[in-house]
Image 1 (cartoon, one colour):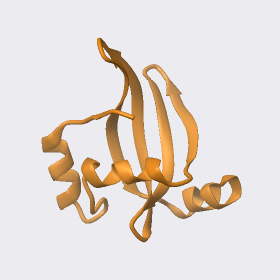
Image 2 (cartoon, rainbow, N blue to C red):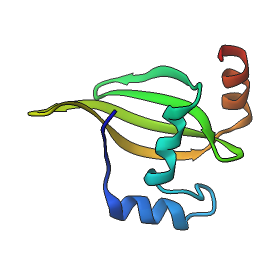
Image 3 (cartoon, rainbow, N blue to C red):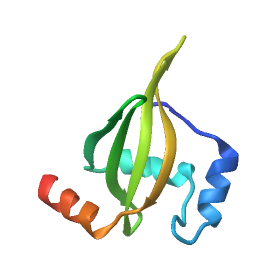
Length: 92
């Protein structure tokens, strides 16, 4: 699985106490069971809810394609809300 993201945005997310991590760490979500659903159609975006370390995070990403094939473009992330935690527990 390939990932792409803006490294400057990743630094801003890491510095924000409501986020607490950057995109580099957030890729861990895809190494454990996670809840996934389509968030929007235009552009087509998905929300993955899963574990990074000891905390649940929600990650918005788009599936894009280049000459090497598909990759996940990471858009934004945050610490999961209680509603998102409930979705994760119910669906994984």
